[in-house]
Length: 85
Image (cartoon, rainbow, N blue to C red; front, side, top):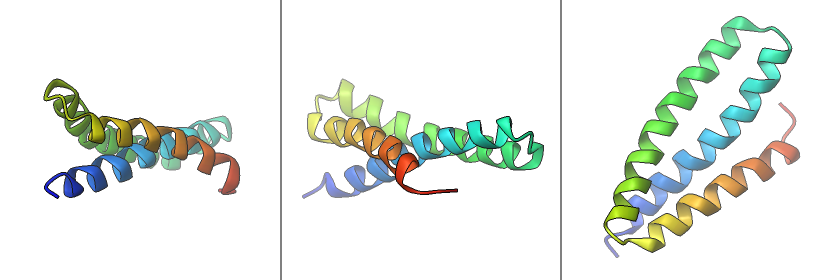
């Protein structure tokens, strides 16, 4: 299946994006500037990857990849409630 690399990349990068965004909020509230800068970098990198793949999949009608993109965002949010950082 030629979609598997795209699915893996979009799923992991989108899940990371949402996860890092929530962690970043926590470190900003704690006024941990260096950590906030590091997580901002991770957010930007994961956003770039997941958006590029997700948008291309949506435009190209590859809705399997789009579904994984959306599901990974939900899973990233769920993980933030389960993993104490």
